[in-house]
Each structure stands twice: as structure tokens, then as C-alpha cells.
Length: 121
Image (cartoon, rainbow, N blue to C red; front, top):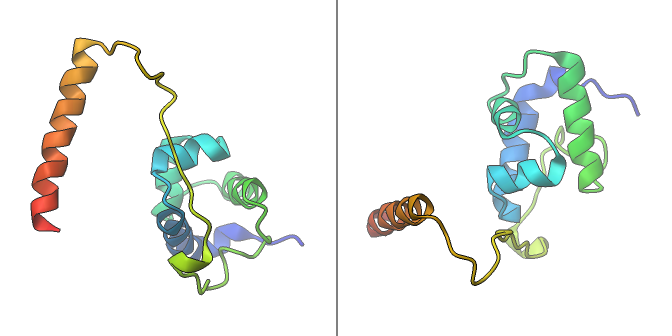
């Protein structure tokens, strides 16, 4: 099946974002799994990819990575969180390894942001 994904950028962007959220991936973990750079994932999700050939190859690669049919992101998916298997992402940072001071400061800042965010959710 030879689908021109580029013509369906907006639909694909919307369905791909739903897929990423429902599977519990971050953009970074999704990028690592697919081998597509994080900035490129952002472009795809904004339907702003400038090159049709590259865009088509990237969507095909995503479909292949997750063993999805070629038209998966073109069709509206009726997916609920109950119908998806749980997905776990973890850091490759070893347990017990010492973190640098800069990393500790950044993680503490992130914890503070998450604490503030949780007050509004």
C-alpha cells in the first residue's frame, strides 16, 4: 500500500498525539523508540513537516516500529486507555550512581514545578 501521508498531515498529527498520550510516552521516549529526533517529532505533531518524502518515510517508520497498519494514523482511532497495554518508560541512569550537582539542581527544580502543577490539576 503506497499512501501519501504528507497530504494527511493534520489528521496524522492529531491521531499521533492521541496515540502518544494514550500509550504514556513522552516525546523524548517516543523519539528514542522510533529513532526520529525530538525536534522532528515536534514538527510532525504540529503538522509542519516541510518535506513530503521525509514525512512519508517518518510515518512509515513509526508504523513499522509499533507494527501498525499503514493507514493507522489516517483513520480515526477509537482507542480507550483500557484497550492499550501498559507502557513503562525508565531512565538508563543506574541506581546508586552519583548525579552531578547540576543534575541534582535541575531535578529539584523540576520537582518544584511538578508540585506547583499538581495544585492546579
